[in-house]
Amino acid sequence: MRTLYTTPVLAYPASGGPSLRVKNSIIALDKVSELHVVARLPLDSIGGINAQEFYERHCQSFSFSPSAYAPEPNRGSNYAWTRIISRKKDGLLTRDSAFILRCVREHSIDIAWCGFGNISFGLIRALKHEEPTLKVVCDTDSVWSRFILRELPYEHSLRRKRQIYKAGKKKEREERKWVNLADVTTAVSEVDAAYYRDLAKEPNRIKIFSNVVDLDAYARPPARDCSHLKPFIYLAGTFWPNSPMHKAARWVIERVLPIVQERIPNVHLVILGSGSVEALSGITALNIAIVGNVRTVLPYLCQADVSIVPLFFESGTRFKILEAGACGIPVVSTTLGAEGIPVTHGKDIMIADTPTEFARAIESIIEDKEYAREIADNLRKLVQTKYGIETLQKEAQEIIRFLS
Image (cartoon, rainbow, N blue to C red):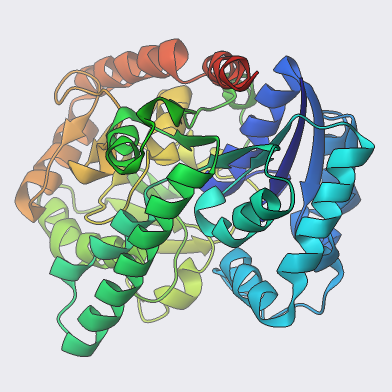
């Protein structure tokens, strides 16, 4: 089968959940099909010529759609989504779909696989309108309406609540349309799949396509001396104002860290990720290091005493947990932070939802090295068994088999 994978999110080196998902999807699809890739963002945005050469090694052809050459909007932590919105305004969506369909005909493509399909509904609709017989996969990394609406209980402004509700309901309507338009909609977990199946007239068109990690990439982490930060708590993600990570970091800084410091005064909190410096610019505490965006998180993650996932609204499955497991680092998460991953509290992860419980879980891991090693080893076994590239390859094979 010949597959064309098109994506508005792409980077190399891949750092952070969105770019990791795309990179691993391309690697898996290349193993089970004749793969062609169309990037919908500029060369310098994906990492330059080194990135292009990397992805060219994992496909038969690599090209850029018209929107990749368009004047760029202001950059920021929400850059990819900004490009999606700008496309709709200047007609680039139509030009992108026409370009992709030319590639489909040129390479006799059987399947158009839309990475990050939950922000590409317009493209999916255009492709199916122009080529109704083309098999189209809407590949989702989360249930986006849940991502939006789950913020409601944590927002106090009535105006902002109305904006959230309106945006979430609009996305729900899109989700209902695309699950019945696309030939397959993918979900990263059974939790997300159950939601999509409830919307679908043909539930068997909902397939699992998991978030996974390339375990080989974590075997030899780059060296960095973090001894001056020990012991330290690791927190990574993508930040923008009022984002899940922004509010999660504030919760840890204001309500969790002071409790931990009472028992472990020399503890440090290290925060990494795009937009983190801007979102947390007012934080000046000496025991909090805000590193910002980095080429790779591994030098920090692999030396952390504990990795935390303090999320209260989000959707999908967390690469933060999978990466920590691959590196053998114990994890403390909220219940929602671990959603969709079959972890067990006290066995391969610590689950806590209140500031005191979260702080006590962190303390138990830092103070009890044997216990920390035990749950970290169990999490590593889970990731190795269920969340390697081989899993994604098998799931891709099943989707292609279903479509053929």
